Length: 468
Image (tube, rainbow, N blue to C red; front, side):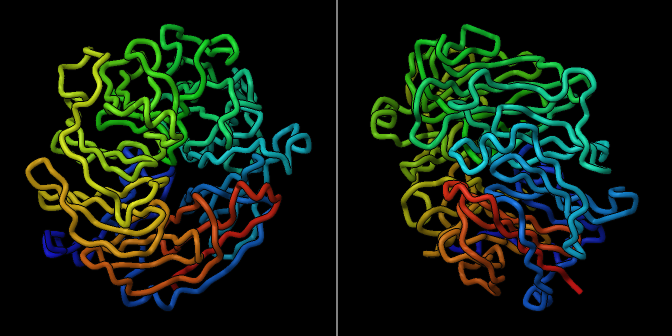
């Protein structure tokens, strides 16, 4: 299918995009907005660049709040979390640090392999941000000064063994609750279990837990107490909130599967707030994926609308599912393998470790995917995806804002800027190499962290490109 199948973006929007409160912009992780960020094809090549040296590596994505009350004044504020759990607030216009939160115990794990790659989350009240630390805690921090809220049950422990269970995926929000998930560390040293937790934002109370292994047990497990290990929830987007907030969607990495209590290499739909399993999908080659370390859950499910969801993993295969019947059967019929509607390759093949961006306009859906060996666009027609264009440029999680597509190249560094209907970039913003880092584009700024968590450094950089 030709690139002409991709609709033209709106010429302009009166609405400005002022905030970017979480990974993927919204709980559905679409990573798309047609509101104007005040950056256009005409001025993108003239943006002012500032490189901010950080006291840690941000191997995730930033968040941003316009005109926030911070440090006794009004600031356009970038918030990032480093791999060793420092959370930093930075003035987007000056690059000045507004505050730094350093979790207690930081000196005990800095420089080690005990890390987090979770993106932070802004509370809708714009008074607090939520951030993870490598000791397995979720912290509630005052946006005004970075101080930790210790009322109620805050901070909240979401693992009993932070040396084996890593908080890798971005935090999310659904109504009154923060949604967080766990996985394992590089090398998959057991024991650990991927699990989803709901934390009440006001009280810090741990509301619900769903374990993807030993799923018949509903509390926070001591990992060694479950006979099965792995099944990590480690995709960048983590747990996706379906429209309406009544259901959650996620996928898992390598681990055992039996269709009843163990759900390695599977897609799971959970009810909210009960966290009961509604339906699931597991590929027919689940055992082979598990044995070959080819995680299905290296990229989270992406909601396409029109009763379709797409996911791709380390095998480079995109699988299109019916959201209403993930495995082709009615919900609650767990235990069946297969049921996908379509399989196709990601751009350039290889592994997918990023989150797609999903653009819906004029009754048409376009999905932008960037992986190890290429970037591409797919269009949804008749419930199936068709490749519209691709190139050979690697990328992390794309974002499309104000009619332009932005993709960070983790190998060479820098951000390629595209029109959505073409594989040829119109600009490249300079930068250094990285890993899972991805940009945000908001309120006249492009913000991109750089560096690789696996280097175990206590330094890094943040690029801020700004319109005049």
